[in-house]
Length: 107
Image (tube, rainbow, N blue to C red; front, top):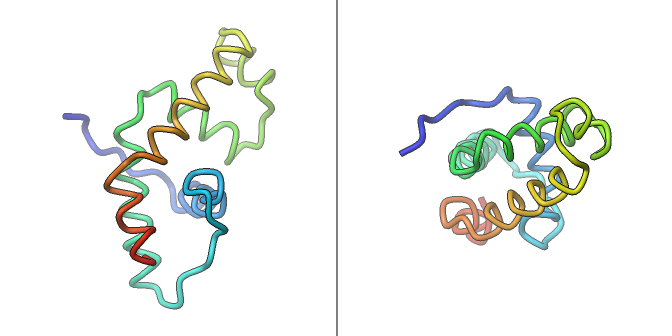
């Protein structure tokens, strides 16, 4: 079991805004802080299921707003490897029961 590593709140918020890429539905901000906290917790747990490389690629892409080419240079891998890592991460998040179950419930 992977050790849960919390991401900074700004990263989680940014990823939640990109939820349309993960769930196929547009992002709708929750009405209260309890719902926001629950969404962040669910997303954090789903992110912990990803490999270190996948988490790093998502962080650099969504938080640092680096291009795939820039990430490839930074990590010393090909742009194609970055793209595959990103696609795999999004697919795993899309299929994550921990995240999808709660987004479908409207959390």
